[in-house]
Length: 394
Ligand code: RFL
Ligand code: PHB
Image (cartoon, rainbow, N blue to C red; front, side, top):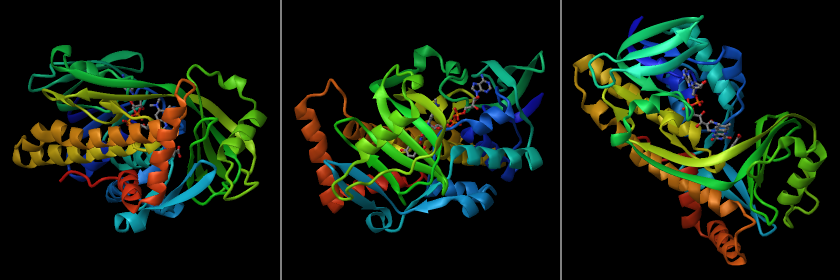
C-alpha cells in the first residue's frame, strides 16, 4: 500500500487528522490496532474546549455534537465545606466549554471516515516504522494474519501513550520529561441523573472528588484513591457514601447525589509526560503519543485535537506549495501550548488532591490558593482562561 500520510492510531487525534486532511484534499490511511467496538466504547474524557468544538464542526462532525452536547458556562469548586462558582464567560470575555464524551467524538468521526474518507483499517497493528529520515518512510503492520507495509510521504504517530511511533525518535535526540503522582482516580459511570448543572471539583480532607456527566440521565464521577487500588474493594454503597462525604458543603446542607446503577468502575493512574521533539525526519507525533497530562484539568483530548489542527495545516501547505516551513515549526509551535497545559494540569491536580504524606502546612497552602481563586477575579480568570482553552497557535 502507498499513501501520502500514514496515520497510526484511530483515537481522536488520528481520526480528526484524517478528516481534516480529507477535507483539504490530502490522502491518508489510518491503521488502528483494536476493533471498532472497542475503540468506540473506551471511557475517557468528557470536556471539549471551544476550539475543539469549532474544529469538529469545521471537519463536518458537528451535527450530533450540537444536538446532544451540553454547553457549560462554569464549574463549581468545593473546599473548606464551602461552594464557589467560576463563571467562564464573565471571566474570559465569553468563552465556555461543551460536555460531549470522547466515545461520541470517536463514533462520529469513525462513521464519517468510513462513509466518505480514506481507508481506516481496524485490527491493523503497527509493529514499526522504517526510514524515518528518508524521503519515503515505511510503516510495518499486521492485518488479517498477514505482515504488510504502508509506504508514505509522511507518517503521523497518533497511537497514544503505549504506541510504537515514539520509538521512531532516536534516544540520542529525544528528551523525556515525566512525573507520576501518589494517587489514582476511581472512575464510575452510573445510570443516575446528575443533580448538578455544572461539574463539581471538590477538595476535602478525605481526598479529591469530581462530579461530571454524560447525559441528563448518566453521571460520571471520580474519587481520588491510593495507587494500586482494586476497584473490587469499592462496593457500590461505599462509592456513593464516599462521594457524598467528599462533596458535603455547609452552603447546601444535606446535599446528596442521586444514586443509580453503577455500570462501570475502573482505576486510572495519573501521569505527566512530554517527549521532545514531537518529530523526527518524516515522522510526527501527536496527542498522547507525545504528551500526557493528569485528567484534573480536562486537557488531554483537547491537546490532541490542537496538535492535529496545526499538523493538518502544515501538511496541506506542503502538498499545495511544496513548502516545509510549517512542518519544520510544528514541534516548537505545539510544545509551547503543551507546556502551558502541563502546568495547568499539574496545578489543578496538586491543588485539589490531598495525600496522606502531605503535611498540615501543605494542606493550608492548598486552601489558601483555592481561597484566592474564589475571591480574586484575577486568580479566577487565570483558571477560567486555562480551563476553557488558550487560543490555538496561528
Ligand atoms: P488515544 O485515544 O490513546 O488513541 C490512540 C489509538 O492508537 C491505537 N494504537 C495503535 N494502533 C495501531 N498500531 C499500534 N501499534 C497502536 N498502538 C496504539 C490505540 O488502540 C488507540 O485507538 O490517543 P489520542 O488520539 O492522542 O487521544 C488522546 C485522548 O484519548 C486522551 O488524551 C484523553 O482521553 C486522556 N484521558 C482523559 N482526559 C480527560 O480530559 N478526561 C478524562 O477523564 C480522561 N480519562 C484519559 C482518561 C486517558 C486514559 N488513558 C490513555 C489510559 C482515561 C484513560 C484510561
Ligand atoms: C469527564 O467528564 O470524564 C471529565 C471531566 C473533567 C475532567 C476529567 C474528566 O477534569
